[in-house]
Length: 450
Image (cartoon, rainbow, N blue to C red; front, side, top):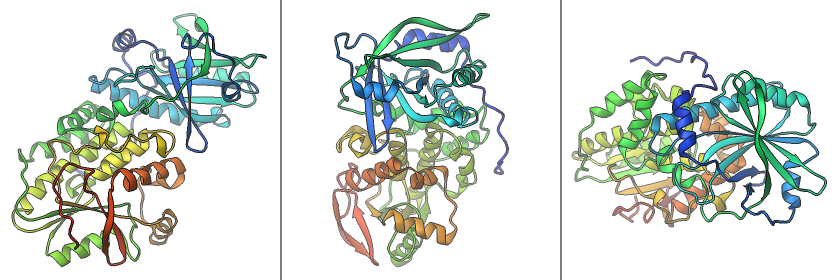
């Protein structure tokens, strides 16, 4: 099936069906907390409504949301963790909203990532959105938002923040009424600072939005994508051809991880080829060649779709590993580790301290995915890696480009690789620093040198 880099049909902000959307709204109470991403890898947690009625005015909240200027929140309602199709629609709606907010006349405003969540946490309770701050408090901004959201009465929820002379901040919600235009609904609610939760709000959702614990979880995502991404059907057909259960052969399997252009002399691809030649091993890559032709299509989609594509690619590679390891050693260029790393680094906002703790279940290897015997991680400084990419004219995915441009994303990614992904730094090979990944994933691995 040929790769079709064709223009996609426009995604309406209102593509969430009305009855289903209203049912979701009834099933999930409105979030009472906000997590706002700030410069410097920090998060501000805010409580909206009756969480702290006796709290004193907080100048930090007033500085974030109060005058001068005016701030607006836009949150995309999300269905329960079990409604995969609704999750996919919400993710695409969120991405479409981001693109619209970056265009005129709203591009003059400051845009920050925003999470809406309940104080108790739990899966299915997080809404992704944005905080839009207009430094000039122009009435054109509100009109532009009304115009943008006017095509989607079932879409993102719009809130507006207002500050007073006592440094108190209030939020009121807007709603599009049939035949009556936009109206404020309900009483205004006070906004105060809230304590930071012990666990980042998105972590409970990661198993259903990017770090899939088994093949069927990723498969359900691509099945929901078939109506608007025909290539999803082709990927699923290839997955269905894989043998089950997948058992490793008698020869060792070594996964080599690291971003492109890592290593002190040459790139990761060259290292994997050299190791493969030295061990007379078969060299496999993830994603495998049979689906690599569709990478550009899936790389342009939201995280949940992109990670489902790469996750299923790992299962296809696992089937190849099972066959090849019965005859010879196997070297794998990238595997589950990269898939999980990008998902966590992309979804967990804030800085390194907001990543899940070292022994959190999110780091567990998928229970139905073939495990390697040894994992090696190649590292290099971000500056040197950037120099090599520019020098070689390498093509980068959108996530790779974001890794270079976004310091928070880069810190998250390196922290996941170097702290949670590695417990010992002990293997050196041709001037490359490789880090053994034992104790991160529950498998028995060799600790020897190559």
